[in-house]
Length: 276
Image (cartoon, rainbow, N blue to C red; front, side, top):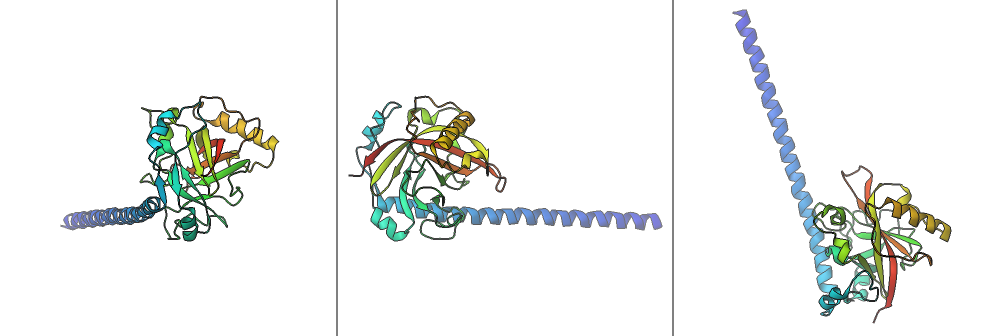
């Protein structure tokens, strides 16, 4: 009789433990589901904001489709015609310094701000809304006129592909080299349009030499050699670095959040145009 009671107590214990574990597991699943829901909702808010900004303040000229057919690796004298309302955008955000457009990854089509303090726009949208998507921003040390030896733009690696979340398609799209047809990135400022060409991309970490501040021509040459050697793939086409043209690096997170891993795309200015 005593053994039977002991067995019942043991079975009861394991039954209760099983129920507790199931409840804990359900709680974790529900919590994760709720967090995913709110994350997606927040992503949607940011996406809507940036879509509305592009729709209201940026007009794509009709001649772009014909223009893109002419773009190749030897042609530096063309650029997409975007009519941007700079006055309105500066009215929304006084830190606005230009518009970024990356035709090979058409989702990268955003206003750019210059942060006045470190991480100012890490979790704040262009319109000032608190949001994990943040904003595409230039760091404190870079040149707001996009004429520094080496300037940096930062954006989050969003799960829905927004902001710089689609940069990874450069190396993850194994069926197509998206840079082969169009390796150019464009910056539109109030006075100029700058055309950049991608010449290196790779994974790195926070604080690596990839983020060094280039202060003189000697450091420039060392930096260019370093990032070219780091590239996942050798980019075709000759680029003349002898005159030290401005560099622009696009940087985003890579891998798990908080891991310190980064993905960078280095570009070099190959042409500039006066805004008409």
